[in-house]
Length: 511
Ligand code: HEM
Image (cartoon, rainbow, N blue to C red; front, side):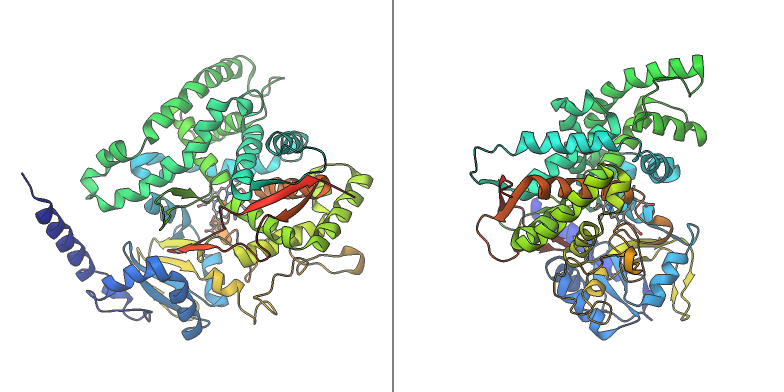
């Protein structure tokens, strides 16, 4: 029988070998940490526990430039400078690719399959149909937000009720997204919601496959993830729906009255336009990935303390951070409440009304600036040698990313960058002040990325987030249960998670 010590020695040798044969073509990029192949192993450990310090040191030492960090996935080139970010923004899919980074990071080839990367038509579906239909389906989004909050927050009289903020928001986002994507009755089926909820974890487990040699990864995916059975569960729901729609489509064309205006139809149209066969298996794969993007555009981290698996969706993190800030600032609640009520009184609830809620918009943008969940974003893999406008060359197959946390905290880009100023971005058309709104990427603001791979779901995310916060401020008083300061975040690798234990107190709005 093979002894564990031999296995460990073998694994150590393999790791040492990987570090020794590392890409030397990046020697011209300065390193933060060790450059020496073997010592860079130590830097890779540092990256996991102290990425923030490394990112800040790199930002200080190489402003307007770039540096590299050693990670267990290989060298990571971190870009600091505005000009280089603009170069990345302008790059095309033949030069640099965003989705390849995601597919590599999550080992999607072995979990959801190669077609996500080779034929990513679902991204166009999110960018076009998911976005285009927000106005037409807005009343359903609003209705589900109201119903989900009243189901989740049980109040008696004027008493306060404490609820873990993070868990609450993720549950609501799950329900509201399911209503938009699948409509009723699916969005109220607990079993179906559970499948959506589990998508994140099962897709994220793919990250573990990197420890296996490539040849064993398909097997690893079957042993360490339940993604295949989850997809089968999803297929069981979608197959009869798809078959029925295909039957009707064949008979009447795709414009028949009563054809549901939902994600399944949008994906079927997307498949057809891209010449892909419509099968329950392929649809389920795309649906699970879209849910992953929407509900849990996420990452997971094993807590250093109890090894529970934490899931930190971006949408959930954004709203949790905004609510923590609002819970600390009752004057801000009043201002946003006044704005929401004024707009709703004159225009009612609609997508267009949300666009006029400038203070609310600014508040969420500021939350994402200061409390964004990732230190880095706009990750890309170079598909050929890439030359930046300052002449720096990144060779083919280099992974690069942008130091967004440091940039969002840079006093030169944002006066008093360390201070939360909820109304920093308020636009005021009456006095001609036009500042970018939440969904708009700029060269200083990267929460939704930028360029070809910028988040295709951001308009839907913004609609969901603004509707949720508008509903809360107009219906509840809120405060933090214990803390009088912003609840402490958890940092691991490049992630910065909102506190997932802190509770927010809710009571029926008093005035
Ligand atoms: C507050 C919520 C969200 C945040 C902060 C967020 C942020 C991001 C960021 C930073 C990226 C990478 C962009 C880049 O590399 O330039 C991204 C990509 C992506 N997001 Fe979002 N996202 C959110 C919500 C959503 C939603 C609701 C969906 C789906 C409906 C979605 C689907 C995707 C997809 C599919 C990609 C990959 C795009 C590609 O590689 O071309 N996201 N998101």
